[in-house]
Image (tube, rainbow, N blue to C red; front, side, top):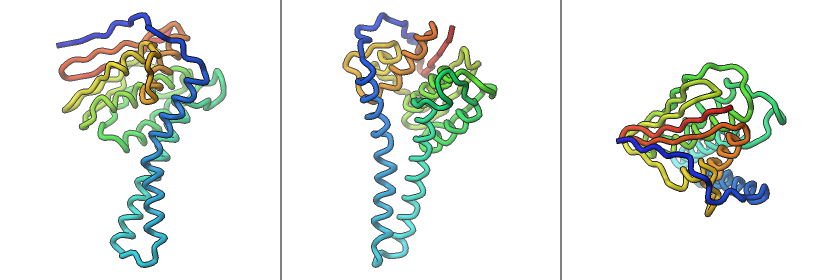
Length: 217
C-alpha cells in the first residue's frame, strides 16, 4: 500500500525571520542538550577524587560519546542551517557526506550514500542534509537510509523495522507554518529553500519505505 502526499497550498506560511530563527535555535539547543549534559556529568565524576576506577572509566566513555555526538551535530548544523561558504557559494559534497556519516554514527539508522561527489549549490546541499536527518527519524528502531539520484533531483529513502511519518512533518515540508514546533522547523526551512528555486519536495509512504524527493528548477 502506497500513500503519496500531494503538495497542498499551505494554510499558513506567514512566519517572519525572527520567529523562524528562534524556532530553529530551539531545535539546535534541543539536539545539543543531551550530549553536552553527558559531558558535564562525566566531568563531575572525574572531579571526585574518591570515585572508583570503574566509575571513572564509565565517565570517560560518557565524555567521549557526548563529545562525538556534539561535534557531529555542530558539523551538521553548520552546513544544514548555517552560512558556510558565504552567500551564493557552493559546498563540497564530500564535506556534506562526511558530516552525515558522522551524524549517522549517533543514530540507529545506517546511511547508504549513492550520490556522486563534487561541488554543489549550497541551497541544494542544505535541503539534502535536512531530508537525510529527517529520514533517520523515520526509522526510530533502526534501518537504512539511501540517498540516490543527483544533487538537482534526489531521493532519500528510509526503510526499517518500524516506519514513522508524522503529519506535522509533512505539513512543514509542504510549507505550512501553522502551529509549527521547533522539531519540524528544519523541514519548513527545506521547504522555503526549495520553493525559492521554483522546485518542490514530495513525500511518499509505503508499508516498507518512507521516501522524500527533492527536485530543483
